[in-house]
Length: 529
Image 1 (tube, rainbow, N blue to C red):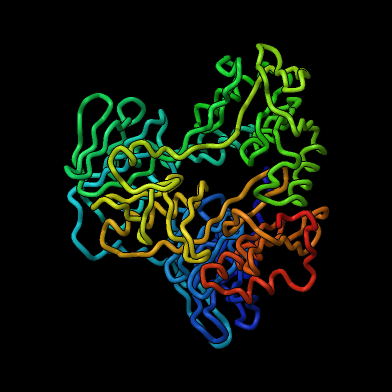
Image 2 (cartoon, rainbow, N blue to C red; image 1 turned 90 degrees about the vertical axis):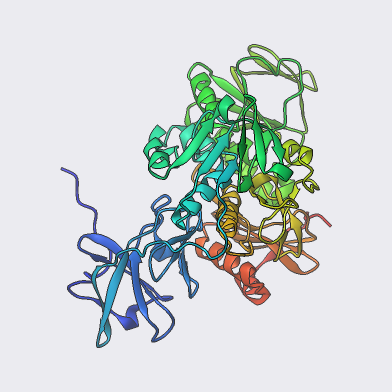
């Protein structure tokens, strides 16, 4: 017989919780057998209660932070409204439960479950239909938000992928490693799209060949066309091809789609060794996943230190050591010259046995549809603070969008899952007249064995890297500065610091960022100058 899970904290219905016991305005207890989080708005402020587990992957909200408005999950930075439990910012879409609270003397008691208020549609004229081009993170998030906000008119989601929107990060993480089941992958089941009246066209039926803004019309590959009232362009990115002899062999795969991940899993069953071409985040996550499947893994990359350009030398060396301690062999400073049926030949003519080859040498934003339609582009589709493109009625989000980032003060384009989801949400609300500026700070996480790297901000270049803590102990905060300003922060096992850094960047609060780094940060002597 399974031992029942121990419930946290006090029984909030029977015993309540002492107001003096709140730590950082959060206190966890339970109500009718369910973990519940009490949230206090400052000393002596109102006390609210919401479910204590994030609806994304069950992260413990009590170990996150309350910023005075939102409760932020420590795992993947989903945000929930303390008053209602609504999931305000992705990657969570489902709300947590909200509970009624009563203060009796110096204790707070939970008295019942609140009913979620009906959505109130944003003010402004409503488009007579919405077409979403792209079935990835941004496309799904936009469709979900439109219906959540009460938009009732037709929504059509067009995707060249063969699968409905799915959890793409898991394609290189737990799903590829064999520790996440198939049912984790779809973001929603088929019934959800039917119930929400969202038409989904996939594969050949969902490929768009032409966009005509003057007519508000998209032309499909099958020769038909559709008219839209508003359109979200979220075409994403495609893998940079591996242009060497043998790249077309059946055991050579990129990793971008769920289909790619399934093909790699199938090939891993008969392969003894694998070569991963490219020491990118995706490449090294693939390496870790294939190690978990029992393969011998080699990584080939021209870099001298993995991910040095993104993370700096010291963090890159830490990541390399982490993989080497798990049996990965690196061939750095090398490129692939040829791929054969059973091996890979490097540029120095050395040979590596390989029953499977996976390449992750970067992606390119899919801009041809936007460029051919005459939209303004510059290494991405240019959008304003509300994610509107240069064409009336068209928004852009995700990997293709280059937006004015309020923190860095310049236009940026970022290829991160959570960024795409949050942009899809903002674009959807703006289609309904919200006039909401996109102000979220970029965030992503990368999993390598039992170590997660959380990255907030965006630093394409820096002149100083400061490290607080010890990378070797897997307890560190790394700050990337340019002209004295912290542009990005990477944390290992410092989830609360990662959340605080994200919130500080949203507010432009440099003093909080400096306090997080403290006086103990040491400089990476090999940081770019």
